[in-house]
Amino acid sequence: MSLSRKTSDIVFYALLGLTLVIFLVQINIIFLHTPIERTMGIVQKIFYFHVPSAYGMYLGAGACFLGSVAYFLSPTDARDAFAKAGAETAVVFGFIVLVSGPLWAAKAWGRYWVWDPRLTTSMLSVLIYVAYVVVRSFAGDGQAERKFAAALGVVGAANLPIIHYSVQKWSGQHPVVIGSGGGGLAPGMHLPLFLGFGAFTLLALLLIWSRTRIELARSRLRQLEDEALTYLPEGETHGV
Figure 1 (cartoon, rainbow, N blue to C red):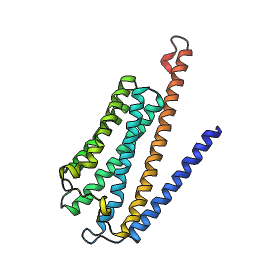
Figure 2: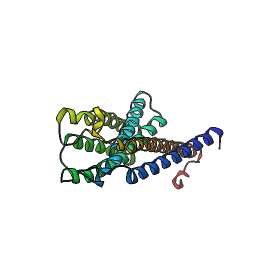
Figure 3: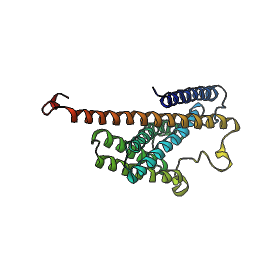
Figure 4: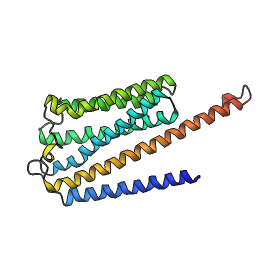
């Protein structure tokens, strides 16, 4: 193992350990020290995971957008791997958002789902990144498939500002949980929320990092396989 590879692994596992510690501290504070919200009760504690997971989805979508644009400008395996890792990360956190949100809504609104502008646009974004992952997983690994997926990565990012400003532009039932004046949070609620942002940010970065490394390793393996095939005598490739 080269020195740079060993250093990279040390940094990765250090960040993994830090992420785990922050999650444990956050969970401890949420359930043992954070005040229980007067109206919703303990169900409100979903908030400390729901909001940071939405932020994690934004980070994954941002990585997918950057990788997709870079791939359009100059196609490389590294840029494709980075975009794919971002899309997969956006899907993971997007599903957390879509599961935790309805659980919260069932208590706040009396039903699991309403066609609120923010909920609808968030679900649309998740479906776009699911489509990206499906295309890259089952449609092949050629230039055409990669560019089509990259186009989805750009379209998905275009929807993010719509999600963010949907409450202000079209009203709806979804609250503005973070805004001017602190979003109405009690003082004891700020620490677990910001710990959640830190934990989910680190987790998103770790997922993007690890998935990019795996995809690059797969690309190198495919290249080695292709090179090996060129050295085989004619008629002996059927067993490879």
